[in-house]
Image (cartoon, rainbow, N blue to C red):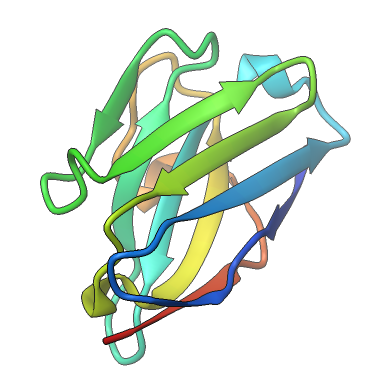
Length: 124
């Protein structure tokens, strides 16, 4: 079983950049596909990005494509989400999650392990 801990959330101004991280422990990190989701106040949790267990494949929601970059370092048991050109609508709690799928899952139900989340707030 893997434990996940996000970090790097902050309050930033629109147009800025931020990198959030997710450190994994207690499992074989390199055997999991990893995903990022976010949940804004009053809204459902939504898919943001996912990366394969090797890091060779990624997939993004259309709303973030071109601004967000997911990456992973299996030697450090960490997955990252680089967020550029931040918009107020990016304000949310960002969660990382781990899946045993060998595909690129976008549904939250495909992820068995979740972190506690990190808050990103974007002001205009």
